[in-house]
Image 1: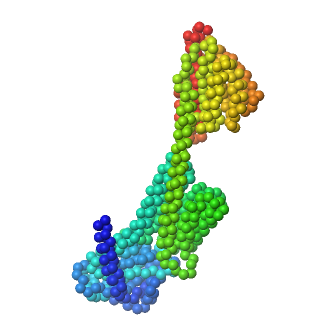
Image 2 (image 1 turned 135 degrees about the horizontal axis):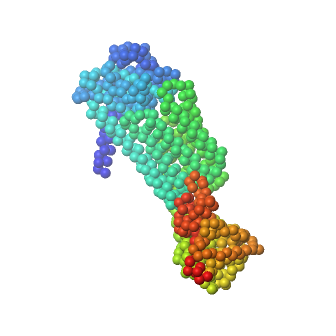
Image 3 (image 1 turned 90 degrees about the horizontal axis):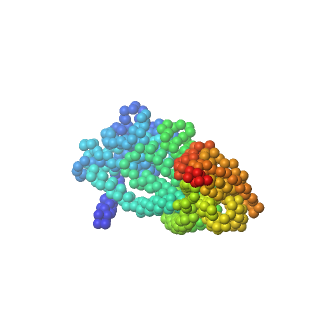
Length: 634
């Protein structure tokens, strides 16, 4: 804190000194010449040149070069060097609008520094607000008047009718450099609150993105991206106009700036569309079109080094695209506020941002408003941004709490289902049974049961509830409960399915269940009935069973029983359609042929093969092998 206070005091003192210097009439009238030195020897930098025929600049500065010109501008003026100055001198060149792209400074005919590279091998740069060049010894003497000449070059996009002004100060190098550092510190302190708020918005955006990942909600994902993208744009803009001190390569910087701006505008459109509910395709198409046009004009302008005809209208096209984008956004926000009447707090805050952006970017007012539009936009954005961030964070936390509650409910339902889907199978006289169960979601819709019956028989039931998730799991749980009650009555498979169908119709909530029911006898006799389920495989070949309707569709469904005899070591495979419907990344189904090829493998191997291929649905596999001992006894 003490260092910060010291820096503030130091900045105030030095800046006051610099302002005093600026108030002193150290610079005479400025004269300019459009076009480059014809002889190519930089004779116009000669201090003895008679420049009285050159036009005098107005108080606003010199005109910029015309679009169809070589882009050069020469400026000549005379600057008084303070008396009694000891030590090396330096000149500070103030570029308040930073309009030029390359500049070279001469003092009394001596080239003292340059920024960027002139044509024909152009290397434009973003000029800092002020540049300091140390003068070689004997270039200027204390108490004298130095001839200062500035040679500049403008890219086609930087040329135009608006005036362009520079200001020069020559003083002891230490004083000039210290004043420059102090001015930089002053600007940094002035902009620090904006950077702080921007960092806070970025942090809140990251939190919202984290909550979006936890809740898997698209609205929160877009909201988090919105909170991150727009402050990034403002930080770049503030750095560009306020804090830039060193030269930056212009083309990469402008392209980066255009990309960040485009991303922010695109996310803004999606934010209104998805989060605020402006579900109008015409709005979405028009808004996206406007920022795409603006970005294209910016990119083409930033990469144009020659005055091609197509470059001339680009600034105006981009300008009106931005105006149209802001108007479209304001209209959409007004629709949310006064027609939809939802998310009104966020929409109202965004209206303030959109109005400020329109004021800042329109430039259609007859009276110049100075720097007010940009400052108003910054203030509106950060104040409204904080309000929006607080509202979005509140919504994100509420969504996270709901999602967490649902996750707890899903976990509870899964625990119930896991108890009803057996992990350890009861002893099955005459058979060795293996099972594999792989739900596609947190809670699956497949189920199976292995229930001992009278006379050492075993009832095996495999079912697949339509749909996935909690609803399917609850329907499956209901079916298992009814099935266990029916199994106690010693019914045949056809009777089990008929009774179970009636109960499912009575409790139907719109879904259905495919189900395969098999009664296994120790001597190898298998009695099976099928309710719309996949047929079983015996020794790698599908058994043709008469298929009945799935459970839960109609009360009068009938289920015909089929009887087969298995030999010792014969293998029967029952599975759900999650195996057949496994889908590869290229969109290829696992299908019947592959299923038949692997149907003699173990239950776990069949399930894992389908899962690796590309699981889309719940996978359940049962394999039943008639043991040799029991077959021999038969």
